[in-house]
Length: 115
Ligand SMILES: [Cu+2]
Image (tube, rainbow, N blue to C red; front, side):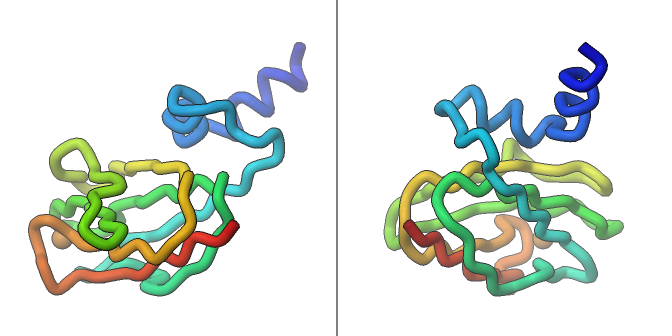
């Protein structure tokens, strides 16, 4: 029981969001993208389908997260993220996702999702 509990805590909120959408792979990876000084860090990343990306606002300003796959909106945060708030999304389709902040249009990141 202890082991199950510890694993549950480690997985945290990110996996909860993912689990509600689809059954995640048992060993799905999680990647953190930090938002600092009006930038996504890293601004370029590559990850396979099934990966959960957690955006964490470590800035003193509020930000939001919008992901576009071509003309299609793949995800967006629920309103704005205040300092230390996060938003998680599990990648479910290959392609190039252009990530931006809905508040500061110059904030950009590119997320390449592979099979
Ligand atoms: Cu912003």
